[in-house]
Image (cartoon, rainbow over all chains, first blue to last red):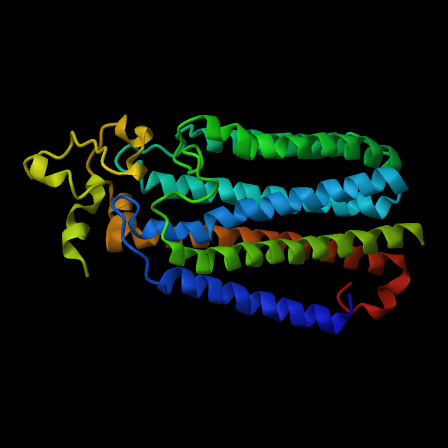
Length: 226
Length: 105
């Protein structure tokens, strides 16, 4: 990408996310009992998970590309996408814990409530954690790349089940089990005005951090090869 | 401000209050809305802790602030990590024959 386009894109991301945060706090929404203002977390907690899914998709894509081309640069991309995706997932878990603790679990001191989606998300992060454990057990770059690419494709295959299919089989604080694909019936349509841009913003944020890491590692590799 | 909702916000529901005396709210469980879920109904509600009193003020707006701050700190952590990687790279570059140009080393 041209440097100027990139700079322009990044300033756009900054403006975009600023607008998302401002609208997230300032846009008036109906006040629902229990949920109250915490409904606004829809703009922050949920897009983190969308960014995680985008990240894991990118990661799987480059793992597949590595397997078909054996180009080690793709392995670098796959591992950094998974790494940044995991970071977003940890933030997603922590924000979810804070949200539930002070909304549905007031007076119980319960930070972890074993909500099906919460548990499955934690399992999901462990599956990707194992990807990095696996990576660290190889000294040889090409071997590490090949084995971890195969594992990564399996890990990616579990994502739709752990984050969509399974959690919806149980009653949960998360919407979805009642047959509605994404929103609860109490979600006000006006919230979509901030929610969708927030998803785009968080995915863009992922891309920014991920591309920084990739560029750094590629530079490092070039230095090693000289 | 909506003072009616605010003063009873921590009990979880505005429908709970009329059913019981003001002084004894420790037995409250609420099952009124879709978001009052089976999970919340299982557990007895105790008096709000100081932390809860802060978080539940302004119709729980500070919960959203806390979530945004968590994300902000996460981004800061990633920035710091990137910084460290850059520093490693700089150090290696200066080790490989660029010492003369680097004042810090």
